[in-house]
Image 1: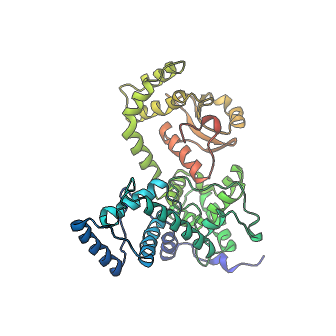
Image 2: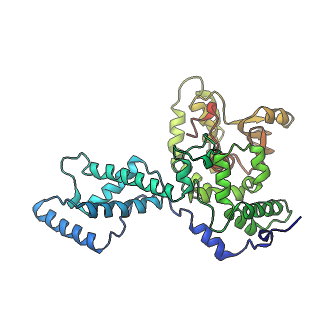
Image 3: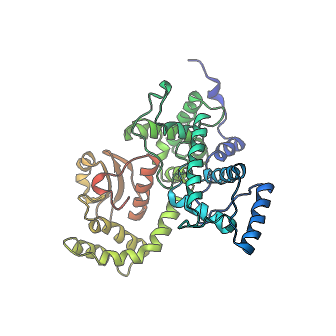
Length: 389
């Protein structure tokens, strides 16, 4: 067997790794959209317009070139966060513009910026078309028109969820299928070691991220195949890192900060539920009274299926002897083996496979269950989807 030049390449160059990471979107949509620099000519025009508007209340109408320049600057800035901003996000951008440049307020418009919002949507659509034409992979797969070379693309792919910044990034410059395959095999070997080099695993997972996303989104790999090809995704640290690449958020910190923020309100909401499920909710909540934060989180999370009257809970408690049969029958579930109070093991089951086990506590399992659906591009089970969606 001949040795490819790729087989001897280094996978630990920090400079090279930084150049790969720099291609990913680096930030979530901001709480307050910052208006970018618009260039000296346009800014002088807008500042003069503001002065006149302050004294005479005269609206400024930009010429075609200047308006196009403004829209380009705003859509380029928006692109740094996502390719598909929502209507409300376009409104945020437009309101930020008229707040900084009140001379652009549209008289007669309900929000003062309806026309600007529509123009931003149209400009962003043009930008996606241009990015598609120059080979941006994320845009190409979302096009309705497919070339013959793209006939193999699965029709089942879905557009990004709300938080996905790097849904389908392009492959790093200089990499191809052969080099990625070398990295993937090296990654498998590293994960199988008793003493793992976590820095090396992180480096390899980052280098193969774009290729892995294309596999997961565009092909119909089974969970068994994914476990075989990308075992790093099923390590807790590996899943956290992958979620970070995908969303630029720390899964555990974000999940628990949000849960803690709303915990008291959720308890009130759960207690208000009437009907046949109210007793089950009360039992869960009473089991955590006077206990630590983990117990209170657990009680709330375990009560949600009862509150939403789900046909099937996303978790199940059972004895160890029933585990093998339960695995075969479970499509998606958190399995608590031995009881929630004194559990022996907490597992995540996807398509009959135990993909993660020995999870420290139930809330951590829920966070990982949530994260694994994002990272594996999975849809939630229809019978248990309300709490997640």
